[in-house]
Length: 102
Image (cartoon, rainbow, N blue to C red):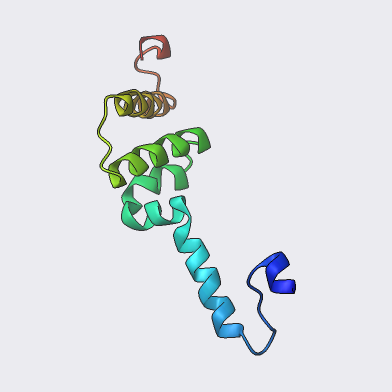
C-alpha cells in the first residue's frame, strides 16, 4: 500500500546501494547536469560569475534544441538573446560600446 501511494522506497541498511544508484540516476537525468557533462567549457562563464541564471536558461534551451536536432528558425532568436547577453557581460567591466548599441 505504501509503494502504491508514494512510489519506490528504500529500507535503511538493506537498500543502501539501490538508493545510491537512484540518486546518481536522478542527477544524471537533470538537463543542466547532462549539459554540463557534455559541454563543460560552456558553463565556465556561469561558474566565474560572468553570466547569470537567466543566460544559463537560454544556454540550456540552445543545448536542448541541439540534442533534439531541432534547427528551426525559432532557435535563432534564442541564440541571438544569448549572444547579446555575452556581449553585454563582456562590455560590463570596461564599457567599450554603449549597451544601447548591443
